Length: 192
Image 1 (cartoon, rainbow, N blue to C red):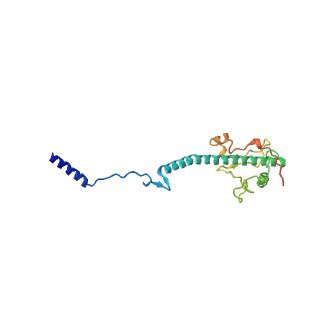
Image 2: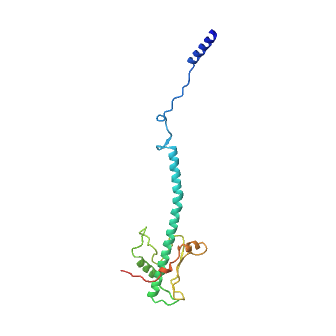
């Protein structure tokens, strides 16, 4: 037994002398957290995903709204041109097949018809037409119009290339890039 006691004592002595590793207690307040701009990693990921979702929804809607605005504006320009041509044809008592007016006369009437109701983003650009110049589409289309009265005694309806052909079918169905004939009556009350 003495030997056994001596062996136990030797083991105790060995254990006391060998370095023992201790695991420090976890203290969350003292441990450093990984942060980016003061936010934890999961918060940064959530904010990034939210921003991406907003971008994926907002950008297509912005371009759809821009397309719709341009189409509606183009339609209103075509309608204004048709209304002015009808007004000038009635005013000048134009007979079928004759020239309704000169381009500068059309431009003057269009400027009067617009009055001050047109919002101009750039004050140096006229809103629809420049004197002696061709009308311009707000989109990438080209206008086609005639200063001559048709053989049936009616004006030739102005058109936009974006409202024609198979590609323009979708635009025509939505009422974009086409002249609204229901608003063409050739009547203006100019106040000078």
